[in-house]
Image (cartoon, rainbow, N blue to C red):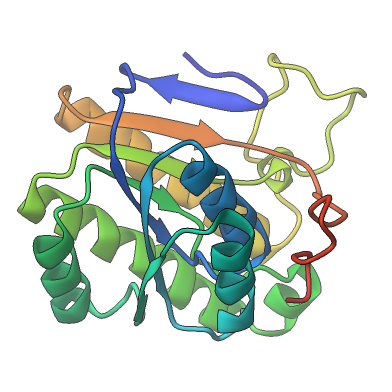
Length: 208
């Protein structure tokens, strides 16, 4: 079933240890804090190209709990697989991506290479390590410039206006096709609009 905000493919199961790719970024760090506060163990894998370890330090201070951190790139299959085998994660929240719309127009090859290759590598490693649950941090940019407002569940996607949006749309399609070929896999595609603001504590926001 496809929804404007969330796509759920299969059923999601309750898990304990969660891997967040790109977990040191804006969305990832807030997600990590919420998971820790709910009693989950959190593993973060991030190459820090557009994020900071400072955000994870503050998340640990706010939650009073530890985050297991690995500095690495999701395109590095060997390192990613070694980490996932070591940690034995139950599910993945995939936030890792280059994310600036304007920059994607100037550097399309870099965006396609990083975002698409990283997702293909992650999905392959998940299959190799038996991890069957993933939530994908997608974007409302997959809708492009819709003819009607507000955007509803019936709005078509795929009218993207920039390379960043196209990468998100393609990443969604990759995960959808993988799930269809593997019915025991659980995939949620979370499409949200531009998030703003900081945590109520003021300790974590967009920078760091």
